[in-house]
Image (cartoon, rainbow, N blue to C red; front, side, top):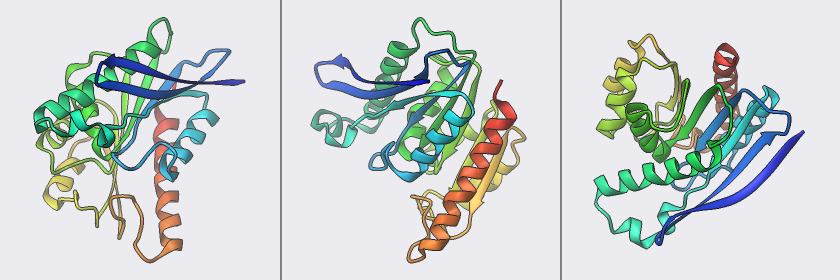
Length: 222
C-alpha cells in the first residue's frame, strides 16, 4: 500500500518548497523524482499519467512542487543565480526525503524549466545514485541544458514536439547521434506536448509520451 506524505522544506528565509512523497510502505527499490515546469505543475496530464505509470511499476514518487514564479526574490535574481537557486531548492528537498532511504536507482523526470536543475545534477551528481533521465520538452535553447544532454553517458529519454519554441533542428539532430539517448519527436506538438486546435491529436501526443516513458522505465527498472 502506498502512503502519501505532503510537506515542505524551508531552505532559507526566502525559499520554502512544497513536496509530495508517495512511497510503498513495504519498500520499493526505485524512486522517480519529478520536477515540473514553471506553469506546468505535477497536477497536469503529463505528470499525472507518469505518476500512475511509475506506481504501477513499483516505483516511488517525489513531486518537488517549487513555486519560482510566485517568489519575488527569485524573479529579481540574475539568470545564473536563478539557475543555482532552482538547483539548491531541488537538492534540499531530495536530501530531506532520501536521507535514511535505501533506493537502488533513481529516475529523474523533468519538464521544461525543471531540466535546468536536472542538467546541473547530471553534471555534479550530488544527490542521486544510479540515475536515469526522462527529459520532457527540455530547454534546448539553454546552452547548459543542451550541452549536458548531448554529452550525457547516462541512459536518457528525450521527448519534444517539433512546434515547441525550444525545438532547434540542429540540436535535436545532434541528440539523435548520442547512443545513450532515445529521442522522440512528436509532430505538431507545442511546449505542452499539445497540438493546438486538435484535441484528439493532443490526446494521441500524450499517448506517445506515455508509451515512450513506459518503455524506457521497463527497460531500466531493476
